[in-house]
Length: 428
Image (cartoon, rainbow, N blue to C red; front, side, top):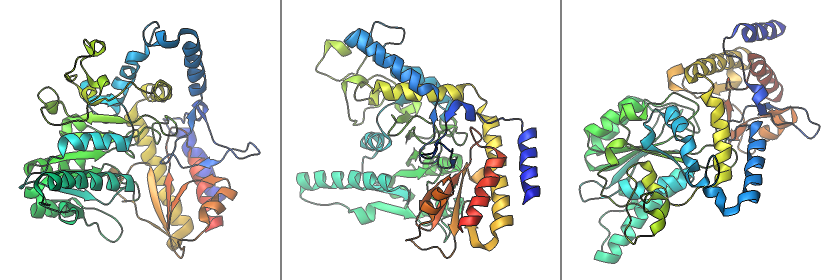
């Protein structure tokens, strides 16, 4: 494989997008040796500037106390607004459609309170089996409506089994647009919400959200998105695609740290004349009268109207520091670099590991982001492959028989990809 190593070095030399590894603290073992870190789809490494930014704000807290909300260059009372433009750019939205708040699952609940309003005609939710937290949250939303209806009327007009329609992908987890379309043809007239992970957490498939949105709206359904594995990974255009709402976390491809503050998108068409239910809190109230403490809720006429409480400032600082990196780069150029890295990873796996590994992520670059999901053949659920990889200096995510590898141009090189496959070869 010496020739391949030479090729990898050459690819690094000629590539127009140079990695920004120097901006990150890359994880290392107890001896201080850096890992081959391909686990950004679970938690990205820490930007080096995060520590100083947090320390600076901690000092401000010590000096100003409660006056830090008002008496400084970036008052805490409006600090969340500092990341709005950057987030809007990454998801392709208008700034008024975006707010940094809560966590992904909490934001999902807030959005479903507003958009899941079952009627005798429309009570179903179409979804692809995805990340378990989404499943639990959506099931509980349906159960809450059913419990309320039963308590009030003494009946259950539908049940969880009839309300949830799971789209059936093929045996490899691939969901074709045609399968999605057929599901809508059968259930669309009775569906309230279509819920899709823009990039599937397990298979890495990037769905055709533009067409899915068009099809959902033709059937009169709302469409909502989980962007956890999409934001910072693939180019998005939620406003242009007319997506109704979306939620995300910021600790994966956005590098905002463990448990980082999440985000919520509400399409502009729902903002100014929204009369439906919502979870309300004082941070979503009209800013001009918020501290007058009026009895009646007067929502801000942007996505901020869904914000419940004042934000975790330290989490926002970490997010802002990470977004500064994205603000300095051309995201489309990063996307093109990621495509080259993933294509090289795919090539090496086929060449080096052959039929020992099956890639279940779509081969089409326009149907995937940074992640390749690898099915390791003859590997059982009890396999210690993650531990073995760690012993080889490799950090990536394993889920049962799958290894999920995320290669990003932010801090990976072609040589990194080559070394990863060499380690995989030794372990497998």
